Image (cartoon, rainbow, N blue to C red; front, side):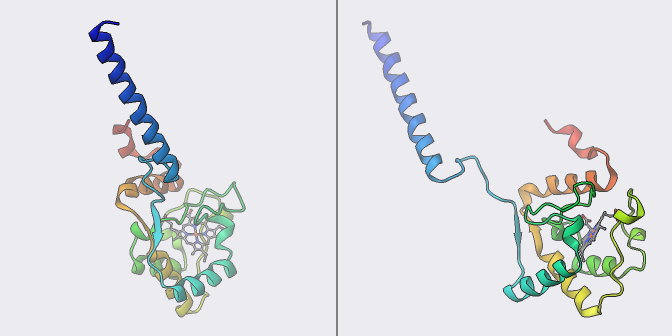
Length: 168
Ligand code: HEC
């Protein structure tokens, strides 16, 4: 074997060995070195989570919305997912939205009446505040914010997110 061939073989050996180590490490950490993890989190206290969770179930929000990857029961209702929604609006915005006699004056709908977000004006003020506080606690990490905006836009309008045209 020539000297040059030996050098090439040695380099290949090092590359293969380091790839094997890298794979072993990424398997070990579960998701691989490039996986940045789940982008959604909540800043809610245990008390708020519990109280708001009860209201969320009692008012059938789950019928139309998905949250924490729990899919909505109606696949046919294209309501926005609520994961990270607290990074898109303020707590006051949620309170006003839930308190509006006609929420579509705040967020226009493209859907048939029965699929639109219902007014929650009949709920006691305290419950609307609790839901608003909980919604505001549902955050998305910065690196995923644009994706969350795009997903919301596409659900609300049924159109592709304009800013996405520049990407990939
Ligand atoms: C009948 C289906 C339905 C139910 C029930 C429902 N929503 Fe909605 N919601 C929607 C739809 C659809 C939209 C998007 C606006 C529209 O089309 O009216 C929406 C919008 C929202 C938004 C704004 C989302 C964004 O990305 O800007 C929030 C927050 C929200 N809903 C929270 C709730 C909560 C909390 C409950 C339970 C108290 C609930 N919704 C119950 C259908 C529903």
